[in-house]
Image 1: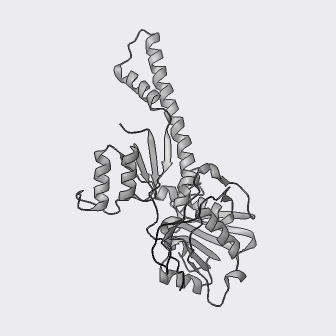
Image 2: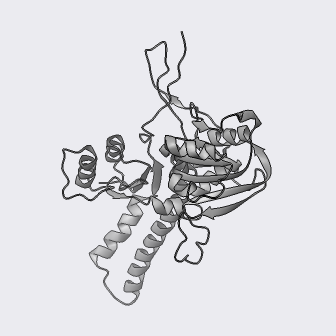
Image 3: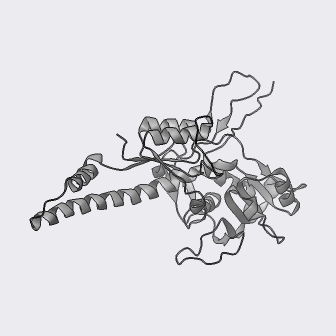
Length: 329
């Protein structure tokens, strides 16, 4: 029998599928869709398809919210704003990037940043330098639903006073889990220590299609998960600094700091309401000499016996790229 639990992950890899099966999770919420192109069949010959078939065999569902999480107010794009402004910081960073074993005396093993280990250890507030936030739309939206006026693929932060680039780098490194290094592109002839930033454009994942749209002036700093060589070169030629975190390192921290506590609160509320509704149905039927069906009793007992809902973040999920450090002779 499956547990009353949800497993959050950025990518649904074989290791994550193994984890979900071992933990007997009821559902995997995988931010990236495991199927990007149309399929005519599912076979065990392909590793990704094999993971889906194995999960289905164990009765585990898979849901991928992707773009909705990127764009929604309070979603991943807004979380990046919190990171770069210093509004979100771990209260206590207890671990640095994970480094595996390596026998080489010349190089370190690849290191991978670790997001704050618990949502309790993170805080989101209005702290940090004064700034405004606006939405970046790659294309003008046809219509915007009420309550979602700030939704969009990217965000633009404008500081009241210019901020040292090095200070923003510190915020970013702390927010995504102290990586072993951060790829950065700066205009030639400038020094990182001397650059000040007023505007930051950001988009989680691969953001060049959002951040480089149009021929107008670019933000002082572009923050995203990945940007191609030619796109980064074009941006620096136009005077911008580019920070490319490695695709999912711009996304993964959101799971622990925002999605996990939000989803936990929502699911627990709905679970409690479902239990109360089933119990009320039984009481109402008894009042009018009705006989509750076995299914109604089973539903009530299910909600009662399953206990609390659990939402956890995958321990096996990580970006495919790590950072290897050259140690010298």
